[in-house]
Image 1: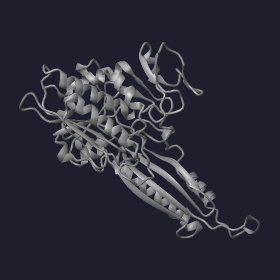
Image 2 (image 1 turned 90 degrees about the vertical axis):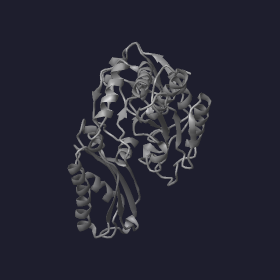
Image 3 (image 1 turned 120 degrees about the horizontal axis):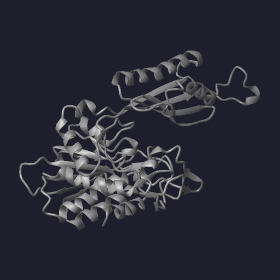
Image 4 (image 1 turned 60 degrees about the horizontal axis):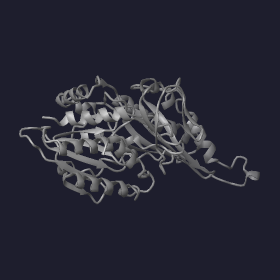
Length: 399
């Protein structure tokens, strides 16, 4: 089965995660993906195949040569719930240039999406414009599975032990929560969860979730003067005090931001959910202090307890860990070149399971997938890039 065929098979399985369920995994439908991968790994002859009670899939490919490191390959099975996750109606197009009409009124404008210029003449996989595609991270899953199939069927490729792991709930920041590092058995690993083929990511945002609870007081609008405290309006005031230029739509590269990802409420209570990001740890801590300072100021205006901020760090910049292991970066760069791309080190404007795994003792840079425009209906993957990434993974573990 080709990597393209595997990818189309996997995106047809809805495995969207949820940040509100409080369960592990966060959605039952992720089990469908886990069981499918379990069956395929067993069929191709992988060893130690198991699915944990929390929906993590593990397997190994035994070494066929001695004195090599055990290398891990990791991807996540869930997809973002920021837009509809299914049913995914994927289709293949031979891109000839210009604007690309996806469907349901969704159009990728050539002038706006610069990646299209690199893909003229490529076979691309897109959706019908009603859902996301799921390339984040079904592309990584498909590439790892295709590489495993090659390794298991070609004994001429000499390699050490290869450890395979597929995680749930990466999109809600919980993919590494219950990952069995000891049982996984790798000396170091790579997540396959990036973008353009050739890119290697060894640094990422420090990340935090901030929940702002706004408490008001309701009374009939006809007699509300000097009595009502409208939590909705108070929440809007809070949002207006956050720096408008420090948002995702106004930042790039290593520039940090505050992102208001949801707002919900009525006159009595409103909740704002922010994600806070910065590559620089000191600036990251200052951002957390800024959001609390706004709450303190508004509590002075509306009364103590009107605004409450709850902060939860989700991951930190892996650069601090990866810099201690230059040999695993060199290995990745050599593999990228062997697959036909020139390696480019880029900072992740996000995070991966690898960031948390690195801090837990498993150094884990991030590799590309050939996917673009993640978390939206204009998401697509390049088939030639997925094929090169598959070759890169084979070269990565080659002795």
